[in-house]
Image (cartoon, rainbow, N blue to C red; front, side, top):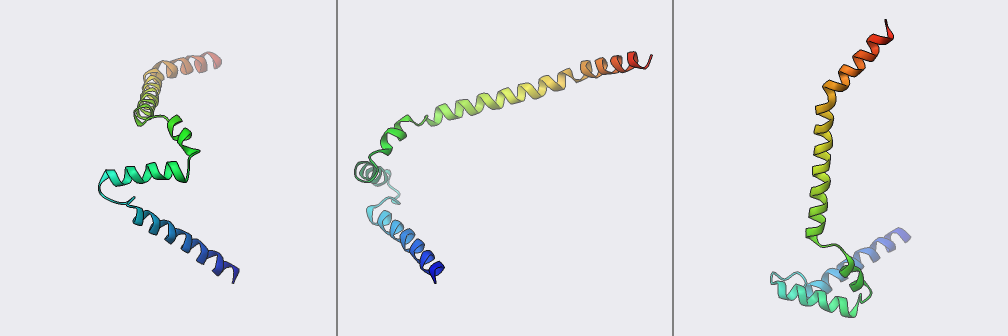
Length: 100
């Protein structure tokens, strides 16, 4: 019985959230409605989150960091691949010296 009550409460909370966002126009195609709704939420419901949103890095910064990490990974892999012949030669020389 408690599980049924808990699940019913979760569904009601979710449905209420969907209803309120639909009523306020958060899902409108026009970006004006969504922007207006976001400003209203920031002002009335979540004023503390504004400082965190402002501190978040921009999409451009995140893309640049991801691109740099990807490039560094590619450079590392190809550096390893390029050094394989020399490393293999060194290993064979060491093995040859040990078995002499």
